[in-house]
Image (cartoon, rainbow, N blue to C red; front, side, top):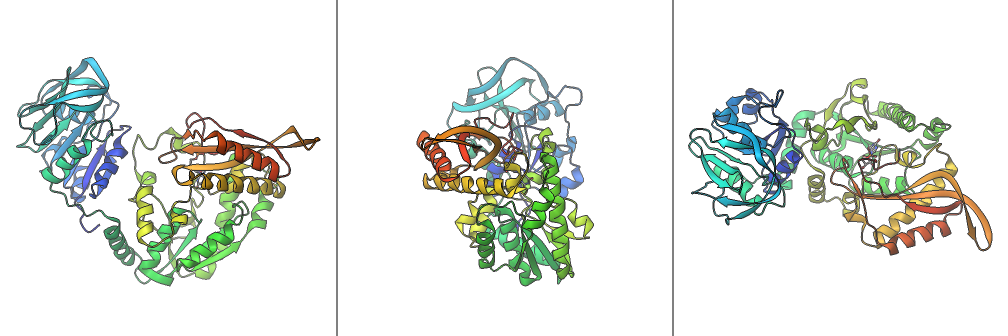
Amino acid sequence: MESRHGIVILDFGAQYSQLIARRIREHHVRSLLVPYNVSIAELRDMQPAGIILSGGPSSVFDEGAPHPDPAVLSMGVPVLGICYGLQWIAHAMGGKVEPARQREYGRAQLHILNDSRLLRSLPSPLPVWNSHGDEIVILPPGFHQSGKTETAVGAIENVEKNIYAVQFHPEVRHTAHGDQILANFVFDICGATPDWTSKSFIEHTIKSVREQVGSGYAICALSGGVDSTVAATLVNRAIGDRLRCIFVDNGVLRQNEFTAVFSSLEHLGLNVLGVDASARFLTKLAGVVDPEQKRRVIGNEFISVFEEESKQFREAGFLVQGTLYPDVIESVSVKGPSAMIKSHHNVGGLPEKMHLRLVEPLRELFKDEVRRVGADLGIAPEILQRQPFPGPGLAVRILGEVTPERLNYLRAADEIVYEEIRDAALYESIWQSFAVLLPVRTVGVMGDQRTYGYTVALRAVHSEDGMTADWVRLPYEVLERISSRIVNEVRGISRVVYDITSKPPSTIEWE
Ligand code: XMP
Protein backbone atom coordinates (compact mmCIF):
# COMPACT_ATOMS: atom_id res chain seq x y z
CA MET A 1 0.00 0.00 0.00
CA GLU A 2 1.10 3.57 -0.42
CA SER A 3 0.60 4.24 3.24
CA ARG A 4 2.61 2.08 5.59
CA HIS A 5 0.75 3.47 8.58
CA GLY A 6 -1.59 0.65 9.43
CA ILE A 7 -2.42 -1.08 12.69
CA VAL A 8 0.00 -3.57 14.22
CA ILE A 9 -1.51 -6.31 16.38
CA LEU A 10 0.67 -7.96 19.01
CA ASP A 11 -0.42 -11.59 19.22
CA PHE A 12 -0.66 -13.15 22.67
CA GLY A 13 -2.01 -16.41 21.27
CA ALA A 14 -5.74 -15.77 21.21
CA GLN A 15 -8.03 -17.78 19.03
CA TYR A 16 -9.27 -14.49 17.61
CA SER A 17 -5.98 -12.71 16.80
CA GLN A 18 -6.30 -13.25 13.07
CA LEU A 19 -9.87 -12.08 13.20
CA ILE A 20 -8.78 -8.69 14.58
CA ALA A 21 -6.48 -8.27 11.57
CA ARG A 22 -9.29 -9.13 9.19
CA ARG A 23 -11.76 -6.75 10.84
CA ILE A 24 -9.31 -3.85 10.56
CA ARG A 25 -8.75 -4.65 6.89
CA GLU A 26 -12.51 -4.64 6.34
CA HIS A 27 -12.22 -0.94 7.17
CA HIS A 28 -9.62 -0.71 4.36
CA VAL A 29 -6.76 -0.15 6.76
CA ARG A 30 -3.62 -2.26 6.57
CA SER A 31 -3.11 -4.52 9.58
CA LEU A 32 -0.27 -6.81 10.56
CA LEU A 33 -0.18 -9.54 13.17
CA VAL A 34 3.19 -9.95 14.89
CA PRO A 35 4.37 -12.00 17.87
CA TYR A 36 3.92 -10.19 21.21
CA ASN A 37 7.67 -10.10 21.82
CA VAL A 38 8.58 -8.12 18.70
CA SER A 39 11.30 -5.58 19.49
CA ILE A 40 10.49 -1.91 19.87
CA ALA A 41 12.91 -1.10 17.04
CA GLU A 42 11.04 -3.44 14.69
CA LEU A 43 7.74 -1.95 15.80
CA ARG A 44 8.99 1.54 15.08
CA ASP A 45 10.12 0.47 11.62
CA MET A 46 6.56 -0.59 10.86
CA GLN A 47 5.46 3.01 11.58
CA PRO A 48 2.10 1.92 12.97
CA ALA A 49 -0.75 4.39 13.30
CA GLY A 50 -1.95 2.29 16.24
CA ILE A 51 -1.14 -0.85 18.19
CA ILE A 52 -3.60 -3.51 19.37
CA LEU A 53 -2.73 -6.00 22.09
CA SER A 54 -4.70 -9.18 21.45
CA GLY A 55 -6.27 -11.59 23.87
CA GLY A 56 -4.53 -14.77 24.94
CA PRO A 57 -4.99 -17.89 27.06
CA SER A 58 -2.63 -16.92 29.91
CA SER A 59 -3.06 -15.07 33.19
CA VAL A 60 -0.71 -12.10 33.62
CA PHE A 61 0.62 -13.51 36.87
CA ASP A 62 1.31 -17.00 35.44
CA GLU A 63 4.92 -18.02 35.28
CA GLY A 64 5.97 -17.71 31.64
CA ALA A 65 2.99 -15.47 30.78
CA PRO A 66 3.69 -13.37 27.68
CA HIS A 67 4.93 -9.88 28.57
CA PRO A 68 5.82 -7.52 25.72
CA ASP A 69 8.35 -4.73 26.16
CA PRO A 70 6.48 -2.17 28.35
CA ALA A 71 7.89 0.54 26.06
CA VAL A 72 5.02 -0.25 23.62
CA LEU A 73 2.89 1.83 25.96
CA SER A 74 5.07 4.91 25.63
CA MET A 75 5.92 5.00 21.94
CA GLY A 76 3.55 7.89 21.35
CA VAL A 77 1.30 5.55 19.36
CA PRO A 78 -2.30 4.90 20.51
CA VAL A 79 -2.81 1.45 22.07
CA LEU A 80 -5.93 -0.71 22.36
CA GLY A 81 -5.85 -3.76 24.65
CA ILE A 82 -8.36 -6.56 24.17
CA CYS A 83 -9.03 -9.13 26.95
CA TYR A 84 -5.54 -10.35 27.96
CA GLY A 85 -4.33 -7.09 26.39
CA LEU A 86 -6.42 -5.16 28.91
CA GLN A 87 -5.15 -7.23 31.82
CA TRP A 88 -1.54 -6.83 30.79
CA ILE A 89 -1.95 -3.03 30.46
CA ALA A 90 -3.53 -2.84 33.93
CA HIS A 91 -0.80 -5.05 35.39
CA ALA A 92 2.06 -3.23 33.64
CA MET A 93 0.78 0.24 34.56
CA GLY A 94 0.39 -0.32 38.27
CA GLY A 95 -3.15 -1.69 38.57
CA LYS A 96 -4.12 -5.05 39.99
CA VAL A 97 -5.50 -8.14 38.23
CA GLU A 98 -6.82 -11.21 40.02
CA PRO A 99 -8.68 -14.40 39.18
CA ALA A 100 -12.31 -13.32 38.79
CA ARG A 101 -14.82 -14.05 41.53
CA GLN A 102 -17.18 -14.91 38.73
CA ARG A 103 -15.72 -15.81 35.38
CA GLU A 104 -17.45 -14.40 32.32
CA TYR A 105 -17.82 -16.52 29.20
CA GLY A 106 -20.19 -15.60 26.41
CA ARG A 107 -22.79 -12.89 26.35
CA ALA A 108 -22.81 -9.95 28.79
CA GLN A 109 -24.26 -6.44 28.93
CA LEU A 110 -21.79 -3.57 28.98
CA HIS A 111 -22.86 -0.34 30.65
CA ILE A 112 -20.93 2.54 29.15
CA LEU A 113 -19.78 5.07 31.73
CA ASN A 114 -18.68 8.68 31.61
CA ASP A 115 -17.59 10.19 28.36
CA SER A 116 -15.68 7.29 26.84
CA ARG A 117 -13.66 8.24 23.77
CA LEU A 118 -13.39 4.67 22.52
CA LEU A 119 -17.05 3.81 23.08
CA ARG A 120 -18.33 7.14 21.83
CA SER A 121 -21.84 7.23 20.36
CA LEU A 122 -22.61 3.59 21.16
CA PRO A 123 -25.88 2.49 22.77
CA SER A 124 -25.76 1.44 26.42
CA PRO A 125 -26.17 -1.24 27.64
CA LEU A 126 -24.31 -2.89 24.81
CA PRO A 127 -24.40 -6.69 24.24
CA VAL A 128 -20.76 -7.88 24.25
CA TRP A 129 -18.92 -11.20 23.99
CA ASN A 130 -16.66 -12.13 26.87
CA SER A 131 -14.17 -14.89 27.49
CA HIS A 132 -12.08 -14.26 30.59
CA GLY A 133 -11.22 -15.81 33.92
CA ASP A 134 -9.29 -12.84 35.41
CA GLU A 135 -10.42 -9.32 36.14
CA ILE A 136 -9.13 -5.89 37.13
CA VAL A 137 -9.59 -5.24 40.84
CA ILE A 138 -7.61 -1.98 41.08
CA LEU A 139 -7.41 0.41 38.12
CA PRO A 140 -3.94 1.62 37.14
CA PRO A 141 -3.32 5.28 38.08
CA GLY A 142 -4.49 7.79 35.48
CA PHE A 143 -7.12 5.43 34.03
CA HIS A 144 -10.86 5.66 34.40
CA GLN A 145 -13.45 2.98 33.98
CA SER A 146 -15.40 3.60 30.80
CA GLY A 147 -17.57 0.51 30.85
CA LYS A 148 -18.67 -2.21 33.25
CA THR A 149 -20.55 -5.44 33.15
CA GLU A 150 -22.55 -6.85 36.03
CA THR A 151 -19.50 -8.46 37.59
CA ALA A 152 -16.36 -6.90 36.13
CA VAL A 153 -14.56 -3.86 34.77
CA GLY A 154 -15.50 -3.92 31.09
CA ALA A 155 -13.45 -1.06 29.63
CA ILE A 156 -10.80 1.41 30.79
CA GLU A 157 -9.05 4.35 29.22
CA ASN A 158 -6.39 6.96 29.74
CA VAL A 159 -7.01 9.58 27.08
CA GLU A 160 -3.94 11.60 27.99
CA LYS A 161 -1.67 8.63 27.32
CA ASN A 162 -3.88 7.47 24.44
CA ILE A 163 -4.32 3.98 25.92
CA TYR A 164 -7.67 2.17 25.74
CA ALA A 165 -8.65 -1.33 26.72
CA VAL A 166 -11.70 -3.58 26.72
CA GLN A 167 -12.32 -6.82 28.55
CA PHE A 168 -14.66 -8.15 25.82
CA HIS A 169 -13.99 -9.04 22.18
CA PRO A 170 -15.06 -6.31 19.75
CA GLU A 171 -13.77 -8.42 16.82
CA VAL A 172 -16.40 -11.16 17.16
CA ARG A 173 -19.81 -10.72 15.59
CA HIS A 174 -21.60 -11.46 18.89
CA THR A 175 -20.45 -8.08 20.19
CA ALA A 176 -22.96 -5.50 18.95
CA HIS A 177 -21.29 -2.58 17.15
CA GLY A 178 -17.88 -4.23 17.52
CA ASP A 179 -17.01 -2.83 14.10
CA GLN A 180 -17.83 0.66 15.30
CA ILE A 181 -15.57 0.26 18.34
CA LEU A 182 -12.67 -0.78 16.11
CA ALA A 183 -13.47 2.06 13.70
CA ASN A 184 -13.46 4.59 16.57
CA PHE A 185 -10.01 3.37 17.53
CA VAL A 186 -8.59 3.11 14.02
CA PHE A 187 -9.96 6.37 12.59
CA ASP A 188 -10.85 8.78 15.42
CA ILE A 189 -8.07 7.83 17.79
CA CYS A 190 -5.26 6.68 15.45
CA GLY A 191 -6.16 8.80 12.42
CA ALA A 192 -5.40 5.90 10.04
CA THR A 193 -6.24 6.31 6.35
CA PRO A 194 -8.56 3.80 4.64
CA ASP A 195 -6.29 3.13 1.69
CA TRP A 196 -5.98 -0.68 1.86
CA THR A 197 -7.97 -1.42 -1.29
CA SER A 198 -7.25 -4.00 -3.89
CA LYS A 199 -6.59 -1.33 -6.54
CA SER A 200 -3.96 0.43 -4.46
CA PHE A 201 -2.53 -2.97 -3.43
CA ILE A 202 -2.12 -3.87 -7.11
CA GLU A 203 -0.40 -0.58 -7.92
CA HIS A 204 1.92 -0.82 -4.95
CA THR A 205 2.77 -4.48 -5.60
CA ILE A 206 3.53 -3.93 -9.27
CA LYS A 207 5.90 -1.15 -8.27
CA SER A 208 7.65 -3.20 -5.60
CA VAL A 209 7.99 -6.30 -7.83
CA ARG A 210 9.60 -4.07 -10.50
CA GLU A 211 12.03 -2.76 -7.89
CA GLN A 212 12.83 -6.25 -6.62
CA VAL A 213 13.32 -7.96 -9.98
CA GLY A 214 14.88 -5.00 -11.80
CA SER A 215 15.78 -6.07 -15.31
CA GLY A 216 15.94 -9.73 -14.24
CA TYR A 217 13.83 -12.76 -15.08
CA ALA A 218 11.49 -14.87 -12.94
CA ILE A 219 9.90 -18.29 -13.15
CA CYS A 220 6.73 -19.58 -11.58
CA ALA A 221 5.13 -22.99 -11.13
CA LEU A 222 1.42 -22.72 -11.81
CA SER A 223 -1.05 -25.18 -10.32
CA GLY A 224 -4.24 -23.81 -11.81
CA GLY A 225 -5.31 -22.74 -8.31
CA VAL A 226 -6.29 -19.25 -7.25
CA ASP A 227 -3.09 -18.26 -5.44
CA SER A 228 -0.50 -19.13 -8.05
CA THR A 229 -2.68 -17.71 -10.83
CA VAL A 230 -3.16 -14.37 -9.08
CA ALA A 231 0.50 -14.18 -8.06
CA ALA A 232 1.69 -14.85 -11.61
CA THR A 233 -0.77 -12.40 -13.14
CA LEU A 234 0.42 -9.65 -10.79
CA VAL A 235 4.07 -10.35 -11.56
CA ASN A 236 3.26 -10.51 -15.27
CA ARG A 237 1.77 -7.02 -15.00
CA ALA A 238 5.03 -5.88 -13.43
CA ILE A 239 7.63 -7.50 -15.66
CA GLY A 240 5.67 -8.86 -18.64
CA ASP A 241 7.22 -11.75 -20.53
CA ARG A 242 10.26 -11.77 -18.32
CA LEU A 243 8.07 -14.01 -16.18
CA ARG A 244 8.03 -17.59 -17.50
CA CYS A 245 5.47 -19.99 -16.07
CA ILE A 246 5.51 -23.75 -16.00
CA PHE A 247 2.37 -25.84 -15.62
CA VAL A 248 3.02 -29.54 -15.06
CA ASP A 249 0.60 -32.39 -15.66
CA ASN A 250 1.59 -34.69 -12.81
CA GLY A 251 -0.83 -37.42 -13.88
CA VAL A 252 -3.04 -36.94 -10.82
CA LEU A 253 -5.05 -33.94 -11.98
CA ARG A 254 -8.82 -34.03 -12.41
CA GLN A 255 -10.66 -34.90 -15.58
CA ASN A 256 -9.75 -32.53 -18.46
CA GLU A 257 -8.03 -30.24 -16.01
CA PHE A 258 -4.72 -29.88 -17.78
CA THR A 259 -6.19 -28.64 -21.06
CA ALA A 260 -8.84 -26.44 -19.48
CA VAL A 261 -6.46 -24.78 -17.04
CA PHE A 262 -3.72 -24.39 -19.63
CA SER A 263 -5.97 -22.49 -21.99
CA SER A 264 -7.33 -20.23 -19.24
CA LEU A 265 -3.76 -19.38 -18.17
CA GLU A 266 -2.77 -18.51 -21.72
CA HIS A 267 -5.89 -16.47 -22.00
CA LEU A 268 -4.67 -14.34 -19.09
CA GLY A 269 -1.68 -13.36 -21.19
CA LEU A 270 0.75 -15.49 -19.17
CA ASN A 271 3.77 -16.93 -20.86
CA VAL A 272 3.16 -20.60 -19.95
CA LEU A 273 5.00 -23.76 -20.81
CA GLY A 274 2.77 -26.83 -20.42
CA VAL A 275 4.63 -30.03 -19.54
CA ASP A 276 2.98 -33.43 -19.72
CA ALA A 277 4.96 -35.43 -17.20
CA SER A 278 2.11 -37.74 -16.22
CA ALA A 279 3.84 -40.94 -17.31
CA ARG A 280 6.92 -40.15 -15.18
CA PHE A 281 4.83 -39.47 -12.10
CA LEU A 282 2.66 -42.57 -12.50
CA THR A 283 5.72 -44.78 -12.94
CA LYS A 284 7.21 -43.40 -9.73
CA LEU A 285 3.91 -43.85 -7.90
CA ALA A 286 3.55 -47.51 -8.89
CA GLY A 287 3.47 -49.71 -5.80
CA VAL A 288 3.50 -46.75 -3.36
CA VAL A 289 0.88 -47.12 -0.66
CA ASP A 290 2.05 -44.97 2.25
CA PRO A 291 0.46 -41.47 2.20
CA GLU A 292 3.62 -39.59 3.19
CA GLN A 293 5.65 -41.60 0.68
CA LYS A 294 3.18 -40.58 -2.05
CA ARG A 295 3.62 -36.94 -1.10
CA ARG A 296 7.40 -37.28 -1.14
CA VAL A 297 7.43 -39.04 -4.51
CA ILE A 298 5.23 -36.36 -6.07
CA GLY A 299 7.13 -33.49 -4.40
CA ASN A 300 10.53 -34.80 -5.52
CA GLU A 301 9.39 -35.61 -9.03
CA PHE A 302 7.87 -32.17 -9.33
CA ILE A 303 11.17 -30.58 -8.36
CA SER A 304 13.04 -32.69 -10.95
CA VAL A 305 10.61 -31.79 -13.72
CA PHE A 306 10.65 -28.13 -12.76
CA GLU A 307 14.45 -28.00 -12.64
CA GLU A 308 14.78 -29.72 -16.01
CA GLU A 309 12.21 -27.58 -17.74
CA SER A 310 13.47 -24.34 -16.27
CA LYS A 311 16.93 -24.95 -17.79
CA GLN A 312 15.63 -23.15 -20.83
CA PHE A 313 14.99 -20.14 -18.61
CA ARG A 314 18.52 -20.15 -17.31
CA GLU A 315 18.57 -16.40 -16.92
CA ALA A 316 15.88 -16.53 -14.20
CA GLY A 317 17.05 -15.34 -10.78
CA PHE A 318 13.65 -15.27 -9.09
CA LEU A 319 10.92 -17.74 -8.20
CA VAL A 320 7.35 -16.48 -7.84
CA GLN A 321 5.20 -18.17 -5.19
CA GLY A 322 1.61 -17.62 -4.13
CA THR A 323 2.31 -17.72 -0.38
CA LEU A 324 -0.56 -16.19 1.63
CA TYR A 325 -0.62 -14.33 4.93
CA PRO A 326 -1.82 -17.23 7.12
CA ASP A 327 1.31 -19.18 6.06
CA VAL A 328 3.54 -16.29 7.06
CA ILE A 329 2.12 -15.31 10.42
CA GLU A 330 4.26 -16.58 13.26
CA SER A 331 1.28 -16.89 15.51
CA VAL A 332 0.86 -19.37 18.30
CA SER A 333 -2.84 -19.57 17.61
CA VAL A 334 -2.59 -19.94 13.85
CA LYS A 335 0.31 -22.35 13.63
CA GLY A 336 -0.78 -25.09 15.93
CA PRO A 337 0.80 -28.47 16.36
CA SER A 338 -1.21 -29.41 13.24
CA ALA A 339 1.38 -27.74 11.01
CA MET A 340 3.32 -31.00 10.93
CA ILE A 341 0.51 -33.51 10.48
CA LYS A 342 0.98 -33.77 6.70
CA SER A 343 3.84 -32.53 4.58
CA HIS A 344 2.24 -29.83 2.43
CA HIS A 345 4.98 -28.00 0.67
CA ASN A 346 5.25 -29.15 -2.89
CA VAL A 347 8.16 -26.98 -3.95
CA GLY A 348 10.01 -27.07 -0.64
CA GLY A 349 13.75 -26.66 -1.01
CA LEU A 350 13.56 -25.48 -4.62
CA PRO A 351 14.70 -21.87 -4.14
CA GLU A 352 17.86 -22.87 -2.22
CA LYS A 353 18.67 -25.66 -4.63
CA MET A 354 18.33 -23.50 -7.71
CA HIS A 355 19.73 -20.33 -6.09
CA LEU A 356 16.55 -18.42 -6.71
CA ARG A 357 15.28 -15.48 -4.73
CA LEU A 358 11.61 -15.56 -3.78
CA VAL A 359 8.99 -13.15 -5.05
CA GLU A 360 5.84 -13.50 -2.94
CA PRO A 361 3.42 -10.79 -3.96
CA LEU A 362 0.50 -12.17 -1.91
CA ARG A 363 2.28 -12.73 1.38
CA GLU A 364 0.26 -10.03 3.12
CA LEU A 365 -3.16 -11.16 1.94
CA PHE A 366 -5.91 -13.43 3.20
CA LYS A 367 -7.66 -15.71 0.69
CA ASP A 368 -10.71 -13.49 0.24
CA GLU A 369 -8.44 -10.52 -0.43
CA VAL A 370 -6.57 -12.57 -3.06
CA ARG A 371 -9.89 -13.21 -4.78
CA ARG A 372 -10.70 -9.50 -4.83
CA VAL A 373 -7.28 -8.65 -6.22
CA GLY A 374 -7.76 -11.36 -8.85
CA ALA A 375 -11.12 -9.89 -9.85
CA ASP A 376 -9.56 -6.44 -10.23
CA LEU A 377 -6.87 -8.00 -12.40
CA GLY A 378 -9.61 -9.31 -14.70
CA ILE A 379 -9.27 -13.00 -13.78
CA ALA A 380 -12.46 -14.98 -14.51
CA PRO A 381 -14.74 -15.91 -11.59
CA GLU A 382 -14.47 -19.62 -12.54
CA ILE A 383 -10.77 -19.47 -11.66
CA LEU A 384 -11.15 -17.26 -8.59
CA GLN A 385 -13.93 -19.29 -7.02
CA ARG A 386 -12.22 -22.60 -7.60
CA GLN A 387 -12.10 -24.78 -4.49
CA PRO A 388 -8.61 -25.59 -3.18
CA PHE A 389 -6.98 -28.69 -4.67
CA PRO A 390 -3.98 -30.34 -3.01
CA GLY A 391 -0.62 -30.39 -4.77
CA PRO A 392 -0.44 -34.24 -4.64
CA GLY A 393 -3.83 -34.19 -6.34
CA LEU A 394 -5.93 -37.29 -6.71
CA ALA A 395 -3.06 -39.40 -5.37
CA VAL A 396 -4.11 -38.53 -1.80
CA ARG A 397 -7.73 -39.26 -2.66
CA ILE A 398 -7.05 -42.80 -3.86
CA LEU A 399 -6.37 -44.86 -0.78
CA GLY A 400 -3.69 -47.43 -1.36
CA GLU A 401 -1.86 -47.69 -4.66
CA VAL A 402 -2.51 -45.17 -7.44
CA THR A 403 -3.16 -47.03 -10.70
CA PRO A 404 -4.48 -45.77 -14.07
CA GLU A 405 -7.64 -47.82 -13.57
CA ARG A 406 -8.33 -46.33 -10.13
CA LEU A 407 -7.59 -42.85 -11.47
CA ASN A 408 -10.24 -43.36 -14.13
CA TYR A 409 -12.82 -44.38 -11.54
CA LEU A 410 -12.03 -41.44 -9.30
CA ARG A 411 -11.95 -38.90 -12.14
CA ALA A 412 -15.38 -39.99 -13.31
CA ALA A 413 -16.86 -39.94 -9.78
CA ASP A 414 -15.21 -36.60 -8.95
CA GLU A 415 -16.67 -35.01 -12.08
CA ILE A 416 -20.15 -36.10 -11.03
CA VAL A 417 -19.67 -34.63 -7.55
CA TYR A 418 -18.52 -31.38 -9.14
CA GLU A 419 -21.45 -31.18 -11.55
CA GLU A 420 -24.08 -31.94 -8.94
CA ILE A 421 -22.68 -29.54 -6.34
CA ARG A 422 -22.39 -26.83 -8.98
CA ASP A 423 -25.92 -27.47 -10.31
CA ALA A 424 -27.30 -27.28 -6.78
CA ALA A 425 -25.66 -23.80 -6.56
CA LEU A 426 -23.52 -24.96 -3.63
CA TYR A 427 -20.04 -24.95 -5.19
CA GLU A 428 -19.00 -21.47 -4.09
CA SER A 429 -20.32 -21.67 -0.56
CA ILE A 430 -18.45 -24.91 0.17
CA TRP A 431 -14.74 -24.92 0.96
CA GLN A 432 -14.13 -28.28 -0.71
CA SER A 433 -16.35 -31.03 -2.09
CA PHE A 434 -14.86 -34.13 -3.68
CA ALA A 435 -14.83 -37.90 -4.04
CA VAL A 436 -12.35 -40.32 -2.47
CA LEU A 437 -11.77 -43.80 -3.86
CA LEU A 438 -11.56 -46.55 -1.26
CA PRO A 439 -9.94 -49.82 -2.25
CA VAL A 440 -12.76 -51.64 -0.52
CA ARG A 441 -15.00 -53.78 -2.68
CA THR A 442 -18.56 -54.45 -1.72
CA VAL A 443 -21.40 -56.47 -3.18
CA GLY A 444 -24.21 -54.82 -5.08
CA VAL A 445 -26.99 -55.79 -7.42
CA MET A 446 -27.75 -54.12 -10.73
CA GLY A 447 -30.32 -55.48 -13.21
CA ASP A 448 -30.46 -58.81 -11.38
CA GLN A 449 -26.68 -59.10 -11.71
CA ARG A 450 -24.36 -59.34 -8.77
CA THR A 451 -21.73 -56.55 -8.75
CA TYR A 452 -18.58 -56.38 -6.70
CA GLY A 453 -17.07 -52.94 -7.04
CA TYR A 454 -15.15 -50.25 -5.24
CA THR A 455 -16.51 -47.76 -2.69
CA VAL A 456 -16.50 -44.00 -3.12
CA ALA A 457 -16.54 -41.73 -0.10
CA LEU A 458 -17.99 -38.30 -0.56
CA ARG A 459 -16.38 -35.42 1.36
CA ALA A 460 -17.78 -31.89 1.61
CA VAL A 461 -16.57 -29.39 4.22
CA HIS A 462 -17.03 -25.82 5.30
CA SER A 463 -13.85 -24.10 6.43
CA GLU A 464 -12.36 -20.61 6.81
CA ASP A 465 -8.79 -21.48 6.01
CA GLY A 466 -8.41 -25.25 5.93
CA MET A 467 -7.10 -25.38 9.51
CA THR A 468 -10.42 -26.51 10.93
CA ALA A 469 -13.46 -27.79 9.08
CA ASP A 470 -16.96 -29.06 9.56
CA TRP A 471 -18.83 -31.43 7.27
CA VAL A 472 -21.55 -29.90 5.15
CA ARG A 473 -25.15 -30.87 5.88
CA LEU A 474 -25.81 -31.51 2.18
CA PRO A 475 -29.48 -31.78 1.23
CA TYR A 476 -30.60 -35.43 0.97
CA GLU A 477 -31.70 -34.83 -2.63
CA VAL A 478 -28.18 -33.77 -3.60
CA LEU A 479 -26.68 -36.77 -1.82
CA GLU A 480 -29.15 -39.02 -3.55
CA ARG A 481 -28.38 -37.69 -7.04
CA ILE A 482 -24.63 -37.95 -6.50
CA SER A 483 -24.87 -41.49 -5.17
CA SER A 484 -27.21 -42.73 -7.85
CA ARG A 485 -25.25 -41.13 -10.69
CA ILE A 486 -21.91 -42.48 -9.49
CA VAL A 487 -23.13 -46.04 -9.13
CA ASN A 488 -25.01 -45.93 -12.42
CA GLU A 489 -22.46 -44.12 -14.52
CA VAL A 490 -19.13 -45.33 -13.17
CA ARG A 491 -18.86 -49.01 -13.89
CA GLY A 492 -16.70 -50.57 -11.19
CA ILE A 493 -18.13 -48.59 -8.27
CA SER A 494 -20.98 -50.16 -6.38
CA ARG A 495 -21.32 -48.08 -3.22
CA VAL A 496 -21.20 -44.43 -2.08
CA VAL A 497 -20.79 -43.33 1.56
CA TYR A 498 -20.73 -39.85 3.13
CA ASP A 499 -17.91 -38.72 5.43
CA ILE A 500 -19.38 -36.97 8.48
CA THR A 501 -16.23 -36.23 10.46
CA SER A 502 -15.02 -32.72 11.21
CA LYS A 503 -11.42 -31.48 11.44
CA PRO A 504 -10.18 -31.98 14.10
CA PRO A 505 -10.26 -34.89 14.92
CA SER A 506 -10.11 -35.85 11.25
CA THR A 507 -8.41 -33.99 8.36
CA ILE A 508 -9.99 -32.71 5.16
CA GLU A 509 -8.14 -35.02 2.77
CA TRP A 510 -8.15 -38.72 3.58
CA GLU A 511 -4.38 -39.09 3.28
P1 XMP B 1 -5.87 -31.47 5.47
O1 XMP B 1 -6.13 -32.73 4.71
O2 XMP B 1 -4.51 -31.40 6.07
O3 XMP B 1 -5.92 -30.33 4.37
O4 XMP B 1 -6.96 -31.17 6.45
C1 XMP B 1 -6.01 -28.95 4.64
C2 XMP B 1 -6.06 -28.20 3.33
O5 XMP B 1 -4.81 -28.35 2.63
C3 XMP B 1 -5.00 -28.99 1.38
N1 XMP B 1 -3.85 -29.90 1.22
C4 XMP B 1 -2.77 -29.65 0.47
N2 XMP B 1 -2.47 -28.62 -0.31
N3 XMP B 1 -0.42 -29.63 -0.89
C5 XMP B 1 -1.31 -28.61 -1.02
O6 XMP B 1 -1.03 -27.68 -1.77
C6 XMP B 1 -0.64 -30.69 -0.12
O7 XMP B 1 0.18 -31.59 -0.01
C7 XMP B 1 -1.89 -30.71 0.59
N4 XMP B 1 -2.46 -31.58 1.44
C8 XMP B 1 -3.66 -31.09 1.82
C9 XMP B 1 -6.33 -29.70 1.49
O8 XMP B 1 -6.92 -29.91 0.21
C10 XMP B 1 -7.11 -28.75 2.36
O9 XMP B 1 -7.60 -27.66 1.62
